[in-house]
Length: 328
Image (cartoon, rainbow, N blue to C red; front, side):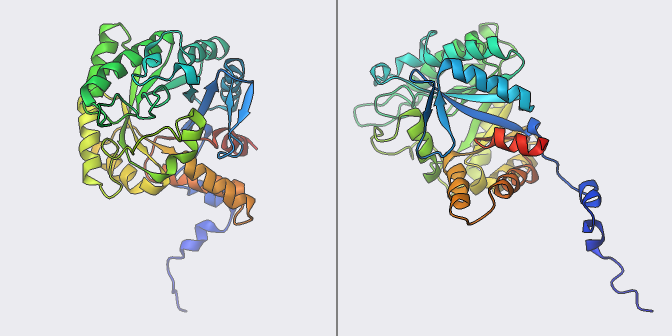
């Protein structure tokens, strides 16, 4: 009797219990970070280019934090929509201890003290010109002057209760400055998650709507964010941030850069996170609305792709929805 084929790989796929037993990666709510937008405006301001995502008042953002905790999501990422009259060329509102971000951090910690709060360290939500840093007369973003402001921004966020500060600006040397300042101010346990490999991507459009920076940007961000053509450079960026004291690193965007996440994980063996950015989220929502695919299946499959690539976790606007699906 022929024994061909001796190995039938389909054997382990026949039953749901067997597929679960042989799964190489497992996705849980603890793998998710939920990005949330806070505003001074109404309780809820839906964002047209991000279907299903809103800006929330400070009162409502605290409720979202409690919701995240109840769903088993360990951390939220906070982004402010700074009022227009507080946006200046020097972005000085970023260092105001009473700014929207800091007040939201304190409200979240009062409402849900057990949830982690990750804060964005960058100037684009605060600048009148929409860049992540200070610019000279020619529009060039100044590295060292910007890094000094970012350091002060990180300190006021840490003082307000941030658990993780996440510099997303891509200035050289800013992680080392922030780490030294945190240590000097006694914030020994505040983590730094460095946006180490952040690309100058076309997938950020809806996010810029959410924080109110779209339409004000003069030029582009290609002089400081990475060229999508480059991979080896990403490894150099990650190495520099780790040497300067980053506790974890992020690759952004996510789905279009899974190869970078995998290479970073294999090279450095450190916690690697990815950001499923606004444009990636919107593509799933619009595809599902058009009948091009099942929304729940698309959400879960893309999130599993991050785990398969080696990510410790993923920032995703689908976090609450995905957590509910996992608990169903």
